[in-house]
Image 1: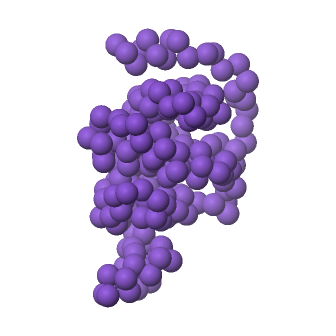
Image 2: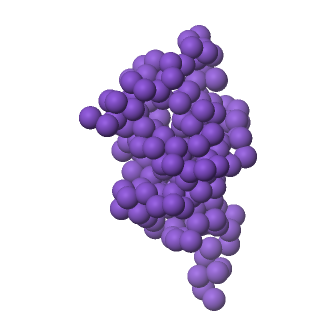
Length: 196
């Protein structure tokens, strides 16, 4: 298949550290989470048929790719990353919908719960999108190729645990019995704007 061929053609990542600390692994998984959120946003809004704007959309929605974010667990959490991703999806792209953003978070959860194979397939599709851009192809060398190499070395349960934690987050309620990722927690005054 195309994906197998692309995976075989990727340069072998010889500088991927194998002895990462728990915090470093968590940081890499959080970066993966925000990149997947951006990828899924584009995939959903284009029905899986990338456009010339797809690489820009992914790049602008992912804090990792747009301004080289490096997460610092335990200060940065899965909830923070998803909240920031939802915020960015409501600020930058042409299609802005809170409900769409929640569906995207659910899709990312499902991808992570399915494990490494599904994550790798998504990253390979993202690789194709970025490769077709005149300016964004460099993100493959900076992020996508190393992530593909690293995720192959991860334990299956490490990836699935992030999916399970995200699933719990998507159904969690705060002390006021509202969604932890609800509009009121995004600091965008969405509820006030909707009332106008």
